[in-house]
Image (cartoon, rainbow, N blue to C red):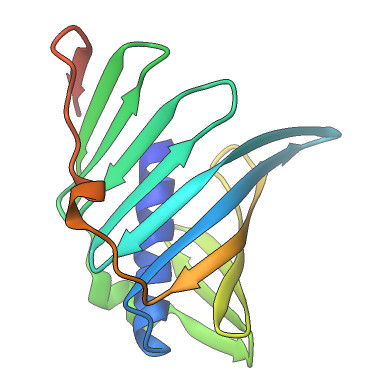
Length: 168
């Protein structure tokens, strides 16, 4: 589930970046999940280029999520586990679904979820949506950089031989 949401977010952002001439993106992020009166926060760093992304989490968990057009790879060092999930998502369909609401806001419905994207000064600022458990999820980006040179090696992963490997 978490893997699908991040893949979806990546693809939506990637499509929107193409519409405003952004080739690559990096930022710090804070992901807040709200349920009733509770809030769970995660922080990390994201790198995106072409059809690749890497989400690195820095909180209590050391997790990296690698996304390409064919799969999502989640490496969880705390659990010593790797989950690989094949994905078949039609990027063109998502692009057709994303609609500009106003100068800084877009909305896209994908897999029965509405994603709200907010830009400031042509930089992605927030992504907001409700997940399948009716949690409100808000991802806020700071220290954003567009069109920077990102080495392809950032998006290559290695699976430690002692980690459990789960293919879905």
